[in-house]
Image (cartoon, rainbow, N blue to C red):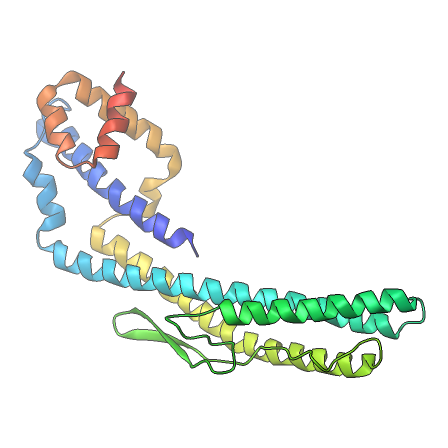
Length: 262
């Protein structure tokens, strides 16, 4: 999901650059004659500008939603992993294959894992709301165009204060199994919301491409080098071409092209 932002940013930049080069190449059938810079800028800032900005806002909303869901996903996975370890410790404590000292060490590990779960719960938040800490509230995350996804709050704290796998391993097993069932049930609903977000981000990406009038296949990484080499050759041939091209490039892009021309 994190690649969503990168894809759109690179695509937007590639469109502007491609528009510039395309205009140069097609100007009266000669690659040496550059168009007026406003011809390309106008494409981006003209009638499409409002629509593109609307789409870009939806992109920003989607990126924020993806980031938030990823944070919550990481927390859920961390809690689940520690509960599974605690379950293993409780099961081992019942086995006669372990000494008293080993079981005591298991109890220490059990308690430490419970503390780590509670630390994760208390450090996971969205706009000062801690959805997994008992007092948390449902999170409504906007995903553009008035839509949203709702992440329901659920208490994942683990109270291990009165649990001792050394003296009562069955009680520990029961408590851990209950916690695992709780988080497994929650994950079913949560995964559904995450899947819905994935569908929405895919739709927004497609909408972005349509708004920009481009095909993502035109911007594969293997085309980057030939594009840069072509631009560098134009810059070295014609100063006016260089000025017109730079009018539509960011400083970083200009520096890269100038370096390639040397």
